[in-house]
Length: 93
Image (tube, rainbow, N blue to C red; front, side, top):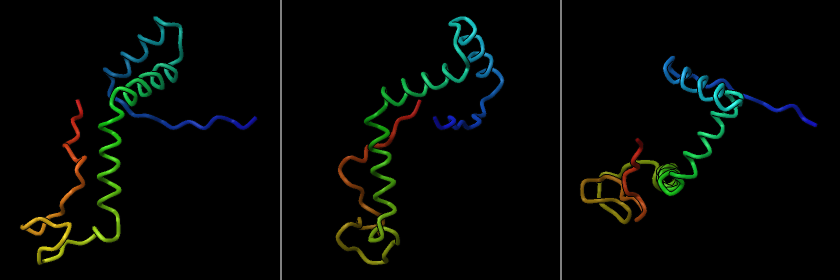
Protein backbone atom coordinates (compact mmCIF):
# COMPACT_ATOMS: atom_id res chain seq x y z
CA UNK A 1 0.00 0.00 0.00
CA UNK A 2 1.41 3.40 -0.98
CA UNK A 3 1.99 5.99 1.73
CA UNK A 4 -0.54 8.82 1.81
CA UNK A 5 0.87 12.18 0.71
CA UNK A 6 -0.04 15.34 2.59
CA UNK A 7 0.49 19.08 2.20
CA UNK A 8 0.82 21.85 4.73
CA UNK A 9 -2.15 24.24 4.88
CA UNK A 10 -1.49 27.65 6.38
CA UNK A 11 -4.28 29.32 8.32
CA UNK A 12 -4.39 32.18 10.80
CA UNK A 13 -4.20 31.41 14.51
CA UNK A 14 -7.92 31.94 15.14
CA UNK A 15 -8.84 29.46 12.38
CA UNK A 16 -6.30 26.96 13.66
CA UNK A 17 -7.88 27.21 17.12
CA UNK A 18 -11.34 26.57 15.65
CA UNK A 19 -10.02 23.53 13.79
CA UNK A 20 -8.29 22.24 16.95
CA UNK A 21 -11.37 22.76 19.12
CA UNK A 22 -13.64 21.06 16.58
CA UNK A 23 -11.28 18.10 16.24
CA UNK A 24 -10.99 17.68 20.00
CA UNK A 25 -14.76 17.94 20.60
CA UNK A 26 -15.54 15.45 17.82
CA UNK A 27 -12.68 13.08 18.64
CA UNK A 28 -11.25 13.49 15.13
CA UNK A 29 -7.90 14.57 13.76
CA UNK A 30 -7.38 18.13 12.51
CA UNK A 31 -6.62 16.64 9.11
CA UNK A 32 -10.03 14.92 9.03
CA UNK A 33 -11.84 18.10 10.11
CA UNK A 34 -10.15 20.17 7.39
CA UNK A 35 -10.71 17.50 4.72
CA UNK A 36 -14.41 17.28 5.64
CA UNK A 37 -14.78 21.09 5.62
CA UNK A 38 -13.13 21.39 2.20
CA UNK A 39 -15.28 18.57 0.80
CA UNK A 40 -18.45 20.22 2.10
CA UNK A 41 -17.42 23.62 0.70
CA UNK A 42 -16.62 22.19 -2.74
CA UNK A 43 -19.91 20.25 -2.85
CA UNK A 44 -21.91 23.34 -1.85
CA UNK A 45 -20.14 25.56 -4.41
CA UNK A 46 -19.67 23.08 -7.27
CA UNK A 47 -21.46 25.18 -9.92
CA UNK A 48 -19.51 28.37 -9.12
CA UNK A 49 -16.22 26.47 -9.07
CA UNK A 50 -17.01 24.78 -12.40
CA UNK A 51 -17.81 28.18 -13.98
CA UNK A 52 -14.54 29.61 -12.67
CA UNK A 53 -12.60 26.67 -14.10
CA UNK A 54 -14.40 27.08 -17.45
CA UNK A 55 -13.47 30.78 -17.54
CA UNK A 56 -9.83 30.00 -16.71
CA UNK A 57 -9.65 27.33 -19.42
CA UNK A 58 -11.25 29.75 -21.91
CA UNK A 59 -8.64 32.43 -21.13
CA UNK A 60 -5.77 30.02 -21.72
CA UNK A 61 -7.00 28.66 -25.04
CA UNK A 62 -4.45 29.70 -27.71
CA UNK A 63 -7.01 31.61 -29.79
CA UNK A 64 -7.92 33.75 -26.76
CA UNK A 65 -4.40 34.34 -25.43
CA UNK A 66 -3.75 37.83 -26.87
CA UNK A 67 -5.85 40.96 -27.26
CA UNK A 68 -6.29 42.16 -30.86
CA UNK A 69 -6.48 45.88 -31.65
CA UNK A 70 -9.50 45.57 -33.96
CA UNK A 71 -12.84 44.00 -33.22
CA UNK A 72 -13.49 40.50 -34.48
CA UNK A 73 -15.54 37.47 -33.57
CA UNK A 74 -14.97 36.66 -29.91
CA UNK A 75 -14.03 40.23 -28.89
CA UNK A 76 -16.18 43.09 -27.68
CA UNK A 77 -16.12 46.59 -29.21
CA UNK A 78 -13.44 47.78 -26.76
CA UNK A 79 -11.02 44.99 -27.67
CA UNK A 80 -11.81 42.99 -24.53
CA UNK A 81 -12.52 39.29 -24.55
CA UNK A 82 -16.10 38.09 -24.69
CA UNK A 83 -16.59 35.24 -22.29
CA UNK A 84 -18.78 32.20 -22.89
CA UNK A 85 -22.41 32.44 -21.64
CA UNK A 86 -21.72 30.78 -18.26
CA UNK A 87 -19.48 33.55 -16.97
CA UNK A 88 -21.44 35.08 -14.14
CA UNK A 89 -18.96 36.49 -11.61
CA UNK A 90 -17.81 33.93 -9.06
CA UNK A 91 -19.23 34.78 -5.64
CA UNK A 92 -16.86 33.66 -2.91
CA UNK A 93 -17.83 34.31 0.70
